[in-house]
Amino acid sequence: MWKYLLELCQRFFNSTFDVQKLHLDFESGAHEAAKEIFPNVMIVTCRFHLGQAWWRKINGDSNLRNAYKDNNNELGQWLKLFFGLPFLPSDEIEDAFLALIAECPSLEEGHVFTDYLVSTYIAPDSLFPPYLWAQEPSVNPRTTNGPESFHRTYNGQFYSPHPPTHVVISVLKETQAQTLTIINSIKNNVHKPMAKKDKLLIESTLQNYNDYKVHKDLILYLRKTGNSYQGKNLKKSKNVENFF
Image (cartoon, rainbow, N blue to C red; front, side, top):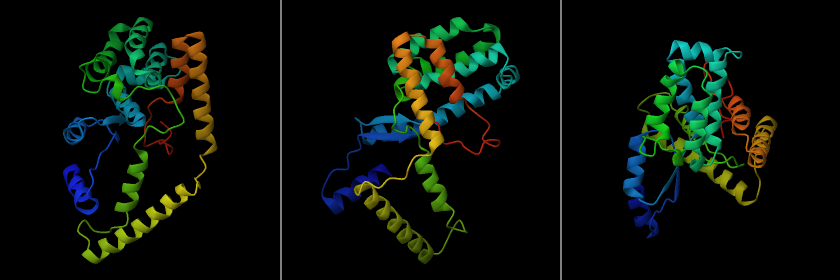
């Protein structure tokens, strides 16, 4: 796909298609493909999907799952702390992870989760090291939910896996018109207002991070942030897109 886009850009605009930053999910194949075409691209991963991956690991172990579901369980409270890690600078992750290990109420049960994190997300040579997913909080969204919402809407306009050509062309024209409308709105500084609850969540997270920088209470910061962004069962949750 990337090679095709490069060819189109060169053919129609006589210029190089240079991607500097790319939002991707946690798929190593997609990362490798992007790096192959754009060696200097900065890959930014989705915090929401990271949280869901961690939650699935917890949910796959009965001891961890039962502890996580019990708000009064010490092990469950400890597991929720990890969901605050993505809101730290990447160079602080290793020390923060070691601090969390020291807080573990049951190493015998907790190691199932921590071993998984080390090999997949924490170690410098892990599959998805911290520089891909950890960053201090900001007002800029760090999620792929926007493109996914677009794809759902686009795919939902077809009622067959192999629609007629004229139907595809009609949908593409309509999509292009809608996209141009959005682009013009952005150029005219007309933006869709952020939902109040999302705005309050971002403001709270930013305030918690500022407090952490002053008081250096890591566990308190991870507790506040982790409880706000913990993984969840999507089948029971209607709002799944606030993991910014």
